[in-house]
Image (tube, rainbow, N blue to C red; front, side, top):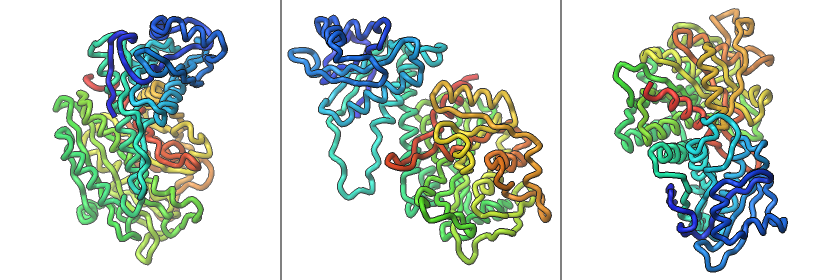
Length: 497
């Protein structure tokens, strides 16, 4: 697929399909006015006749004869007062939904001058070009690697997006959007890959390949012997029941100054989660291949960094294991000593994500991090609390939490902060070890974060529970690519500082 930015006049730019936005009420953007003039007032006639309503996300396609374009697509962008960034994304998504399986081989999208509510970070032309670029990649994604009959190739192979000029800022914004979309799609590819292929060693191989593809990425992989020597007993405890050995994967991107402290990302990489001896119900267990969604989002984010080369240092650590039940698996009641020296009584082997993460959170202290952010499909309780809309956010630092929340708002990859009060810590009390790995049913997302917080006291830390946002069930089953947009926006906001 060919994506490009153009500042040429709309009337002189040929394409099979011209795409413009029309509001339900209010002034038209200049791009739509120019298109209407080139079409001798056709858009106004269609609107007057009721063929175009302007309701947000509603598209209409109209054939054209003897023009620079074979057809015209008009998408409603709603009322000016209601045109939030979220509604603009909805309109652009509708455009791609109509284009991707349509007859057009090429499209010219003129929507970056749409009036959108909000501060410049979400309403400027740069911001809208970023959104359009991301949605182009995101909406044209397919995953058919394991189908014996591949779907027919799309006719659409070229999309040109109209910009007001050819300046560096516009190009960089659009290219960052495209790169973010590609990072999301890489995350989705990893998540959608079946667990008989995607296991810890395979995941480590993807990290090694990333280092081969990009000179800016350096990869190191620790095997089970190295982890045992270091004392990473909780990661090893989770992987004991599987024939697939665990791995600790470290990827480094050094785009900033040598003295700059790195921003550290930690991803939960449970490539399949049966629950172990605390076996999950069979229904829907296939979706536990997505339990490595945290690690997948780390991979996707690192790919974006490698492509865009921002001036920032980032270290990514993935704790990868497969949680299976066999005669050697960890049992409820086992006590293990973590890398930090703290002991954990494993009361439920299905609370394994926090066990692999706690050793990783201890390990990353060696990098003297600026901040540490971990991503994990950690608790079903988070889905009950927030559904599939918002990522759960808990942190030991208010400034970090607020910056992540703001990044989520800017990108539409939203998060919601939950409390991390000391009063919840007592739910993890154990009669036999320093702590238990579960805190009972009340506040399950919070007590899971409380557990992790005990290993993150030496630096600013935030935890993103993406159990409800990393993948979708039902007819639209598949990985979503979240929270790559949030992470990329946050890191880019600190690049060069």
